Image: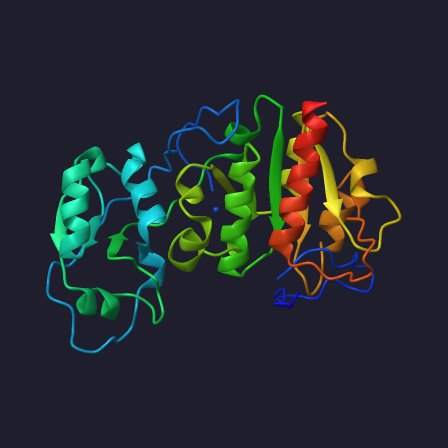
Length: 302
């Protein structure tokens, strides 16, 4: 499979673990879901800002990709998120607007009808918008403690993954396998909008995300709350199947170029690799996350 290497903003040193991976601060109160992916939206309490109602410029100009969701699944998921009620600017081509009005627009959002060419100018080149876009404020995240209590199930921690496509795909897999949520470092993670939201197919609106200042301290907090951290490391002698059990588990994924950073790895209870008998030891981080989530959820079910 092709590699999409990422680089951290700092070197992790010669003791950096192996490469099994690739290349959102405290919000309002959150009642963690107990089950799988069948859950409502989460409330990040984002600040409300106004949006221009003027006509788009003739040229594409500077595109605010972080301020837009586009595509059917991401937009419909955002419209259904109670936290979005009364906020944002919903743009739709005439045929999509007719569909929304026929089916009912969630949470009373108002539709602005726009032609396809004008909509394309407002979005990044190549954005597959399917006639729908929603200009919103990025989700801010929930508190780590709100995500982690009570200690049960699976949490995914991403150590400086910056590629929106990969992070979005991990959100999608985490929701599908019933994870409690995602933990990322605040300074080195992409906004939950744009290409990330498109890749997540609506999962960013339904799966809570905690943005923390320091991942190592976050792992210490999680350990105090009863969580066990399993880091993915391709050079480990321990296999993922052998490392996982029924206990509350934090799956820690690192970037493809550098893997999990040293201090983060030292705060994991165990480092494990995904067995690859085919002899081709190169997995994209989103693929590795999907495999790890499947194995962890299987162990949790007993």
